[in-house]
Length: 100
Image (cartoon, rainbow, N blue to C red):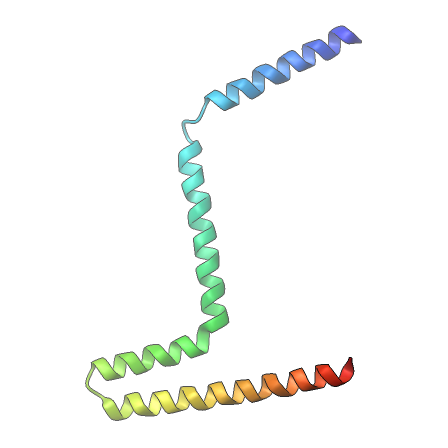
């Protein structure tokens, strides 16, 4: 039994040392993992801040194109949507507070 365990430890040790020495594709995989994490964070941010960002981008595009009236309308629309969302969140928080 001892001999078998020693052989396994030896085999496992050799395998671990071999993988530790081989770092040929390791750096590339690290960059791929980092890129995937950044992409996931960006996707989550866009989903979370989606409408508000879309309205702000519309305002910026219209303002840079010289359409001041359109930019003001887009900003007012975005602001009214934000106020509606804030009111809905406040009502939900009040309901949650009464429930507890």
